[in-house]
Amino acid sequence: MGDADQQVRLRRFWGSAVFSLGTLWGFANFVYFPVAALTSIVGSSWLEVFIILAGGLLTFSASILAFYRRRIASRLLLAGGIFLLMVAVGGQVVFPLSTRGIPNLLLLFLSGAVAVSLGFFGTITDRKGWPALRDLP
Image (cartoon, rainbow, N blue to C red; front, side):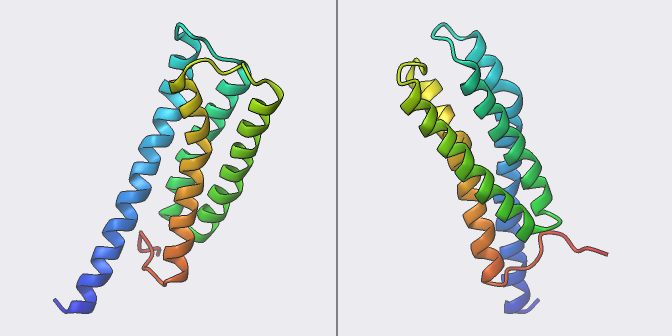
């Protein structure tokens, strides 16, 4: 196996690993974290639960899409993540005391920040010419 083949396999591995972690994060965000936020002692507003659910759904679905169409998934992650961050910051400006507890506040901002980070990763790797994560027929 040549050095170029090893580079291609390594890049494909790291791309798959990052977007697999994005899929797991999105699944956890979509299923577990809203339930934990709603049932926690400190409580959460419906805006927070919506942001966490939307971030989970966005990250989960776009990370799976990245295995087939990385460029589209990256753009979706960037746009959706920036929107979620703007809604989270706007919600904190309009309702400054609505988020109670550091874990809820952290989850609120991580919902958008993780999506933006995955979007940047996908955009950078796409522009650098990394191989597709899957061989399409």
